[in-house]
Image (cartoon, rainbow, N blue to C red; front, side, top):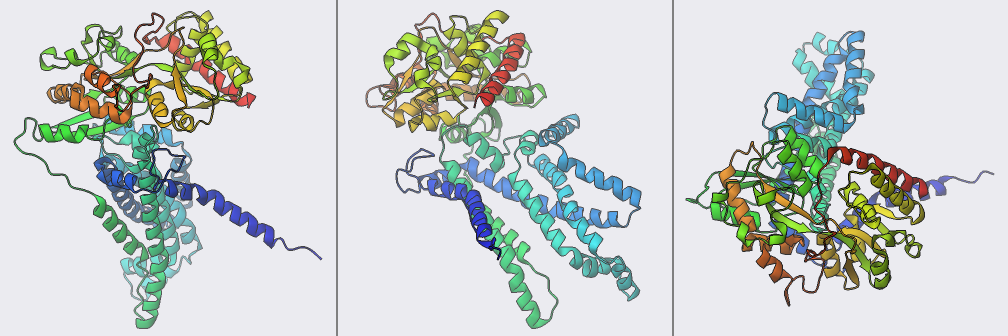
Length: 629
């Protein structure tokens, strides 16, 4: 007698449900966390929901996401259904060709599609923003609708429409009352897929948007680069909205069917329509309208800023808008190279906040304009150590924003400070800490560490020295079993998950403020003394307003808000001293005050040839790490 396989099937089904839904449950629970950690629950609180509702950027992203998704779903469903019906009446050769054409965007890598859309809009000089994002979403949703509708059309009796017209129906009536009801399941499936694809899309949205228009995917991506629990709150809100929509979509047809059976009216389910209305009501309900001041110096003007994600204080943008009457449109990037692509392709911004080496490159390639020193009153307020740096002598093009170092964050309960003092960066080869280290997934910083460990300059152009640094890193990943991470190191080290790791000083400041057992060490062999600065591109449309913002962000109030919220060191000397002072936010945290007295510390210099060599070798290091693990 054969044993039933049903118990195994049920267990497998339960495991699959747990696998899919446990991360969502985890996210919902931590949206109510009182602390800032994304992994350690410290108590129940609604603080992150309040923070979310107070954030205009998050509310606008929520509105943009669902308004575009609903419009794109409606338009693509209508267009895709009509196209599928028309295609079914075409000749076989045309139908076969068009089906292949329809499948191509689905199979094409998203990044290729995204760059194609971006170049299309740039070529035709279409200003990117809400409309371009909507057009792109409609375009990539239509193939999915057609793919869902066409099988239903094939399974339908092709003579039904002709029979209806023979009985007196017009072509339109035959389409609406005969064909559409037969293919309704395919239409609904296509609409749901289109809605899901639109809400979920990041890559295409990122490359086709502009003027500060962001959907939730872009917003969450930029938020995830720093520790911000509001990401859990807004993600939970999205889950609630979609759950309500799904309830209406599934319950609505049942209610409509019961009503239809009572009145025999032949009405069709209105569940999706009800869901759309409800979703719009919820989204519009959480959007806050801000009052604008009048008769202010820059009333009605707009400032376009391109900055790192989660790199501004909570109040600086709102306060600047209230003081000047201008509107600030903030877009975010997560790497200097990502920012460079947009600037090189003609994207117009009034202010950029790149890093030192990228500023050097932008100056050399003539993408920046010189600052009007007569309009700046902030330079005397900045620390001398972050002015007049090699990439911009005399600060002709840039005004420092944040600065800091790269060093080693370590758990004092696991790492002997004598080991750090004796070995420096070579502690990453000390097998005592095997399996207990983080490497930062940055070719620049990782090679800096290796070169400094070997006693070389991090700006070396010697291929032999770079090769030696590569071999040092390969030895590290093969023998020490490190975990190669990016910003995950922040929360992980705050929770003491490993013994040590390479980290930016600003991130170490947060780690040390969250966990008193954490320390920050900079080897005497030297480190990267980095800075991010505000610059004005040559194609800026409002340089006068840009100068006003640079002054505001460098003044005490703006700089204090930025630095106290983000945790990175302010270039404003008074703010830096105050935040590190007795009883203040970063008292006793050595990571907050950059080291300026070590002759071995260097500012990174951009060299295209060296960058290509290091990029290629870093890829090999990561392959070696994968093989070792």
